[in-house]
Length: 270
Ligand code: URA
Image (cartoon, rainbow, N blue to C red):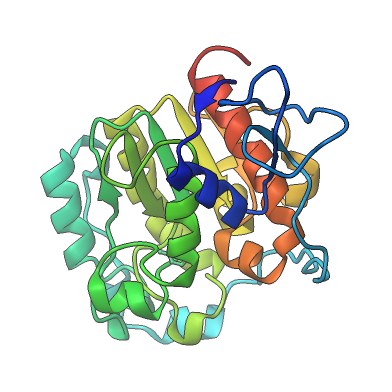
């Protein structure tokens, strides 16, 4: 991969933990294989982590359904609007805003439908809104979102052009707890319809809940990344969640490798 490296993109790559070294033959370009021996300067991207000071988080499986809580909710409160599979973008957004299919509707301030280009080639899928997202009604607007914006910037992309960002859940789980299977099951048709409407060329599944929902797999991300999966015929590349990367800085370089893989799939090179 060759990209003209301007100062902004270089700064973004370095922020992601991609250490840049000058390559004598390509001092103005970036390649994704490391040269040897490396020299600190602008030029060629080496996928080594910048820092190695944090332990990886343990993988965990989905929680069992919260049967007691869902049984106690009023039946009418758990009925999702019919006909999602035929909705256009606007109808779908309204359906999400009106959704009362699980108990998250009781604590949310805003639904978080998604953001970006509705003609996008890239679809990025996260887990669920956090506090800032719940307040603003937009995905990834907190610290994890800043990192995500930098990751996109490193590819010359941004959240409003050629990219669409959505979550598995459209409402915030209280206290940022993990999504529960019942909530994922109720919300998944919205994400599925977003994929159908968007018809992206690549999906980047970020974090275990996106991966489990899209791939129906409980394998750890470390074992699923590095290859191309499918969700309803759309290629899927698996990567770490940006919030995880904030706690596990060395894995930023792996996330960069995942983005490079996704980009080459999109370009028909992988
Ligand atoms: N984490 C997510 O998975 N999604 C958001 O929108 C914000 C944080």
